[in-house]
Length: 424
Image 1 (cartoon, rainbow, N blue to C red):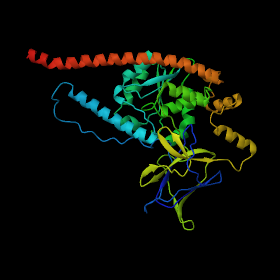
Image 2: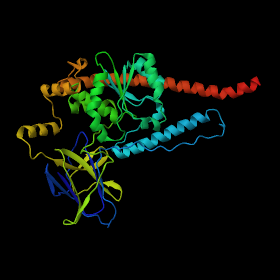
Image 3: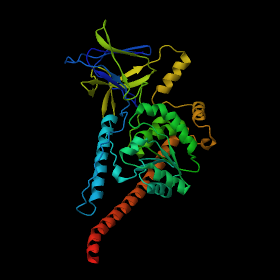
Image 4: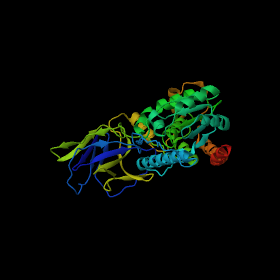
C-alpha cells in the first residue's frame, strides 16, 4: 500500500518510464515495501487552502491539445496564393502548439511539423514507424515507394480533427488499390495509462494483421513519436523476441521519439483525493500498488515540481521523484519472477518468450521469427542504419520534387491573372 502524507495543499503526479536511473539527493525517510509506504514532504512555506488532489501520469497529458475554431475570412485574397499562405501559417501554428504541449508534458525536445507531410523511418525490414497519413496520395507513396501492405493507425477521431484530417479518402484509396489495407486501433493521445492498458491488445491486433514474411507494416499515431514507437517496441520485444533494451536502442537510433508507458493504475488526469488525517494533521493517500519502480511529481500551487528531499531520477529533460515498491507477501518463486521481470536489461528464456508470443500471437505468420540473442539485434541495428540512410535519401528526393511542384504552381498562379487580362 502506498501511504502519502503532506501537510499543505499539493498533489502528486506519478509516472513510470521504460528506463530509470537513480539519482539520490539528500537522504529522506523512505519505507519501501508492498503493503505500506510512507512519503514525507517538508512543509510548503506558504499557508495554502483548497481541494487536495492527486493524479498519476506517464510523461504525457491525457487529452489532445485544444483547438480553437478558426474563422474563415470573407474578404477576397489580395494576391495569388494568399489563401494557401494563410492555410500554411495556420498549420504551422498548430504544429507549434502541439510541440509545446508534447514537450512540456513528455519531458522531451521533439519536434513535429505537420505541414511538411509524412515523416517516417524504417525500423525493421518489414516495419516502419511514422507520422499520420494526410491525403490519399500518401497511400500511393507508401505502397509504391516503401512496399507498405498494412497501415496500422493508432489515432483517435479527435486527433484527426485537430489537424482537420479526413480519414475517408485515405481508407477509400486503400480499398481502391487492393494491395494495401488500413487498420485502426485507437489509443488516447498523450495518455500513457491508456497506452499501457491497451498495449497487449494493440500488439496482438498488429500481429494478426501483419505478415512479416510477405508485407510491410506502417505504424503511425499523429507525430509518430509516442504511441506508435511504443507499440512498435512492444511488438519487437513480445512477438519478435528482440531484447527490450536492444530494441529501444534500435528504435531510438533510427527515429527521434519518446515512447513512455504510465505507472500505477490510474491515468494522467484521473484525480485521486488526498484526505486530512486528524491524528497526523496532514493530508494522506493510501493506495495498494504492485511491486515496481515509479516516478512521480508533486503539484504545488498548480505547478508540477519535485522534492529535493526525496530520491530523484533524470527522465529526458525532466527531474522526477522516484519510489520503489518491493514484494513482501508472496511465495519465493513468484517473488523471484517479479524481481526478474522488473529488472532492467532482463532477458526472457526461450520458454517464457514462446509462452508470451503464443498468448498474443497464435498465428503461424510469426513462427520462427524470434531473434534470441543480442548479437542478432546488434547485427540488425547495423543493417537497419544502412537501410535508414537509403530511406532518408528517398525522402529527400520526394521533398525536392514536392518543392519543385509548389514553385511551378506558384508561378502559374502569378501568371494566370495577366493571361486573363490579355484575353479580355
